[in-house]
Image 1 (spheres, rainbow, N blue to C red):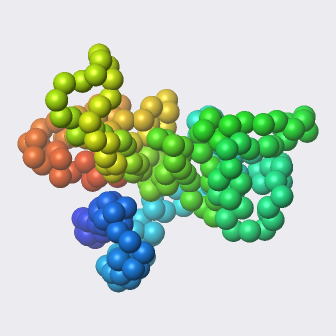
Image 2: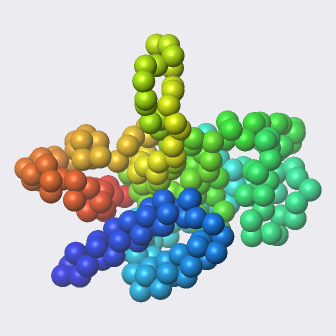
Length: 239
């Protein structure tokens, strides 16, 4: 138990470095990107082994089945469409088979009755491959970094730098910008929310002890502790 604070900091640092790297890499050319990849390796490597061990706390025997999740319920029950039911010219032995298949606009697969079906890639909930899970949001597949009763991931959202008056009510105007945001997925109902202290407080309501504990700390401390309480809740309420 004495080592838990260090492990939590390592866990948070891995996510923080990942977020900052994605923010910088989005605007860099290839050579700058390579330099940051090298830097990221040396910064994260000492922490990554500890963070990977920490992930075992969310289920020592948990293993995501490779395949495509058409719906949130498929993900929640770990019942994707397996690779052998996906209709594609790609080699199913490729490690990135599913990612390559989903790079197309649509997916062909065989349902439980063996009938071939077609679905738009944009309507797919997500997929799992090589033990990692990805969720479709904002026209991209985003890796879920933490899997538990409360999942955590990051995704880019389009924001607008407003200048002047809007063209019409409800219209989006100004210069579009891509902003990396932190998000959480509630495994109880599939709801996705921005990862803020206010959202964390609501998510803690099913646990009176953690809810009261989090409520009692200052606003500044709440912002600094949301990852710690995410972890605490997942430990107390395993899948």
